[in-house]
Every structure is written in C-alpha cells, then in structure tokens.
Amino acid sequence: QQQVKQSPQSLIVQKGGISIINCAYENTAFDYFPWYQQFPGKGPALLIAIRPDVSEKKEGRFTISFNKSAKQFSLHIMDSQPGDSATYFCAASNTGGGNKLTFGTGTQLKVEL
Amino acid sequence: EAQVTQNPRYLITVTGKKLTVTCSQNMNHEYMSWYRQDPGLGLRQIYYSMNVEVTDKGDVPEGYKVSRKEKRNFPLILESPSPNQTSLYFCASSLGRQGRYGYTFGSGTRLTVV
Image: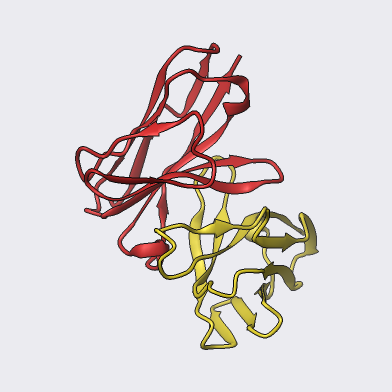
C-alpha cells in the first residue's frame, strides 16, 4: 500500500522553465512533509520541508505548496537549471511514527539547455 | 565534516553467505534508520533505532537484522542473503523524531546477490 503517491515518474523541462512535482497522501495523521533531492551516486539530501499549518513555503527557487483538504502537496522549481537535474522524493511522517519517513516513489527530473 | 559513512559502497555476494553493511555517524544523532531503494518503489524503511539498544522494524524487515550497541554505529546484517535483497541500501541519521530536523543519508551501498 503506497501511502504517498508521487507523480510524474519522470519530467523533462527546458532551462528557465518551471518544474512541478506532485504528491498525494492518505494518512491524515501525517504532519511533516519534506522533499529530498538525490544526485546519481549520492544519498538523498533534505531540500525543503513544510508542516500542515501553512499552505506554502519558499526557499530560493524552491516552493512547496500544501493543500490539507485535498491531502496533496507539490514542489515547484522556478527558473529550472541543468544543475537541478536529479531525482526528487516527497515524504511524510506523523508524530508517534517511530522516526519513520514514508517516501514517494521518486521523480527523475532532467533540465535541458 | 558531519556525515554518515557506509561501507562497502559496492558488494557482490552469493546466496546464503552472511554479510554486514556498516554505518557510522559523527553527529551524535540518536535516531538512525536503514532504507532500501528500488526502482519504482522509492525508499522503504527496513529498521530504525531511537537510541542505543532500542531498535524496531520498519516496513520491510524480513531477512535483515540490526544492532545498536554504540550510538554512532548501526550495522545492517543479512544472515542469509537472497537475490530479492539485491538493492541500493542507505543508512540515515537524524537529530529528532521522524527526521524532523532532516535525515542525513550515507552515500549508499549497492548490493548484488547472485
């Protein structure tokens, strides 16, 4: 049972464009929603995170939008650059979850010149 | 440099031959986890530990063992590896619960069981 569904599986964006990755969750007890970025041969690294008491969080070119009623959240990468080419994972966790992050299946982003 | 160190990076082994993947962190983190990454399935938690001598199962614990005798180390043990355990494995540590302060991941161990 996939508790966090992520789409699309892969994404190609032109340099300077906007990359959008979507995630949906089922467990209403989730209260922490991070995004991780993974480059080839490396482990995932925390990119940005949001809690459900806010609808949007922005850090530089990266923005998380959160819709609690729809149980959806998304990552927007503005002015996408070739260096942003990586695999992105959304994740979710809940208090009492025993240090467990539930990850989405990942989106492979390629930013073309 | 704050980091999580896994060894080995690559390992090819035969079915049934016991192996251990080591994991060490230098950040004094209480929480450590093991994940496996498979195409189309994302990252799935195998085991986690909230402190020394405190471990618990994640989503896919079958065929794996862990121990936490020291705060910095969290080895993953495959007593009798099988081909379905061929995967990319990541160790991670966190200051807070549920990775609230961000998990720090190791660089991964690519395991092939033939």
